[in-house]
Length: 338
Ligand code: NAD
Ligand code: LMR
Image 1 (tube, rainbow, N blue to C red):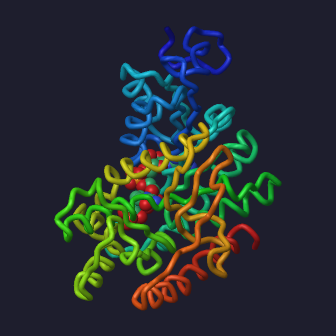
Image 2 (image 1 turned 45 degrees about the vertical axis):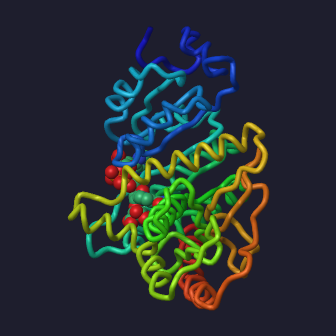
């Protein structure tokens, strides 16, 4: 078989696309930025996901190499590679889910907002492609600063007349993954048994873990609360500093992205009660976007949950988070409107 068949070439690989092995319905997923630090392990993990029947790997560099490599895995999904802007349309056409980890990562000393200059333009171009080629796809946006790139994507889709707020989801699952891990460490539990809601946004003080709502129910001393909140908020920086200029979280991010993408696909399949935290269009606060628990269904984030009761420490944290979030959201909106 051709190693990288073109769409519509009638090859046997083309004809196997609609259903994953075993006759289960499969979804078509594109990763934009698939050759990067997150993109590569994310592509590998999505190739292992039985809900995926077709996997499109797009990047401006090295997409053919990553595609050749991943395509040898003996799992159900058919993999195709797409290189450069001229192949973006092919990468996106017909997709059910588009995951975007394209863009530059932080180096020590930088904030996520320092990435805005370069990543805002990358996200705009990719979202213009989505509006044109797969306007009904669910979008999982990983590129930083998420607090601004999600508003950018929303504005691009509004301009194109394709905006569906339920389908645009900023990925904050790494904050939840970290929170589960750090809380489990303090409690002496298996992290798989721990669930920590993390709300707000995805940068510094906008990352607000709700430790009063941890499952299983538990309590923390003030010292534990302060330690955990700070560690969760600074989790990204901890990795950036440990990597000493070689990038930011990639492996834990790929894991967290796949956990979230899998939840989106289960929602699309029609599974009941699929709930995860994400940064979405929201009426939970006065801000137009906010991260909180959402229920994922056939049309995306079908329900956005209220925050529930907060303690005094969390109420103060929420006010700080909202102040920074408002500015980051406005920066994203202005980038497209002005
Ligand atoms: P990386 O530099 O290793 O990879 C980025 C990839 O994007 C590269 O392969 C690059 O070629 C590609 N790219 C650049 N411009 C592109 C374009 N126009 N179209 C398609 N692809 C393009 O970076 P990384 O470590 O994979 O991180 C990617 C992004 O994800 C960064 O912005 C980082 O801050 C962000 N991130 C977000 C989270 C989160 O929790 N949401 C976590 C970790 C990293
Ligand atoms: C993270 O939380 O790890 C990412 O947002 C990357 C970063 O820059 O910290």
